Every structure is written in C-alpha cells, then in structure tokens.
Length: 265
Image (cartoon, rainbow, N blue to C red):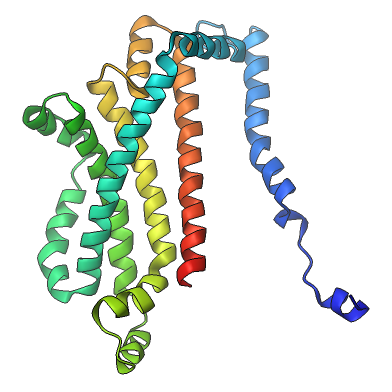
C-alpha cells in the first residue's frame, strides 16, 4: 500500500476499538463488585443487611444444584419472550396504521393514548379475574407492557417520514406494501429498534410485577419467596440475574437492529 493510501485510510480512535469498549463496559461493574466486597466483609455493613458476593454465589450454586435456578430462568425467559413477541407485533401493526393512515390516527390514537396512561399494576386485578393466576394473565400483562413503547415510537416515526421522499417514490409507481417496504420502513428502522429495546425492558419490568403477585416459579417468584424467608443472598442473586439476562436480551435486539439497518438502509 502506498504512503498516500496509508495516510488516507481512516484511523480508529481509541474509544472505537473493541477491546477498549469491552473493558470500559465492565469497569463500572467491577468497581461496584469491589466496593460491595469491601463493604460487606469489613463490617461496614452487617451481612444481615448486605450479604457478601461469596454468599450470593453460594446461593446460586445451591439453587443450580437443586435444579431450581435453571428452571426459574427458563420459565421467566419464556414468559418474557412470548409476551414481548405478542406485544411488539401488536405495537408494530397498530403503530403502522396510526402512523400511515389519517383515519387510523383519528380513530385509534386518542383511545390508545388513554389506555397507555393506565398504570401497569391497575391491569392485574382485571387480568386475575378474567384469566386467574395462570400463564395467560402473566403473558398478557407482559404483552401490554411491551406494546406501548413499540406503538408510540413506530407511529411517531412514520408520521415524520419525509413527505417529499414519499411523493417522489409514488411518482415512480411505488404504492402500498412496496412503498412501505422500500421507503417508509427503512426511514424508521432506528426508531423501530429503539422501540423494541424499550419494549423488552418493559417486558422484564412487567414480568417481575406479574411473578411477584402470583407465581410458583420464576425469578420474580424467587424474589418474593426470598423476601418471605429473609434470604437476602437469594434476593441479590435474583436481581443480578434479571440485570444480566435483561442486558443479554437487549444486546440481541441491538444485533437485530444492526442487521436490519444493513438490510434496509
């Protein structure tokens, strides 16, 4: 490679290097872990209020050995993924109707806006009366939580697609589904991915609410059971698992977003 070509090649800044990004991402958790270790082992905070990291690890090992930990994780993950899929699909569908259709905006937006203002826990008594304390009520609650972030971001983004771009596409004979997939969808891909990530975070939040109030298995149930038994080590374990699994699922949606942007933009 010539000297001129070498000089012309873009240099990656230090902050853009993968190793630096990974190290930067784990730095704060490591600092928190170190502070936790010092505070819990030095006597600064008694173990009755703050278990040591070793105690939490041991609680996880014991639950895993009994087979409960893997089962609880699998059940909670299944509930989140099903509820998220249902809620996100409904949000995409109705968001597209409201964002693309003036009639849909007039007929649906006010009612959906009012429903959105209802606090999440307000749905629980109704769902319990209609569906009892089974899987249907939990998944429905999670789907409600996942629906509104997707619906709001998609409908808002579609309303603000450049009208000149749409008119130009129509002039070239694009209409209906072809117009949507060729012009409108690529224009709102970043908003769709942002809505999906928010919806996934809401799905985990609503999962815990559902399992705290009525479940016999799952990470939310582990929180509730551990509170009743005074097992702080298991409470910390459940919180850490929710954080880690939530972050992993969010990272998967982020990868989906990168693929979608490369595919449609």
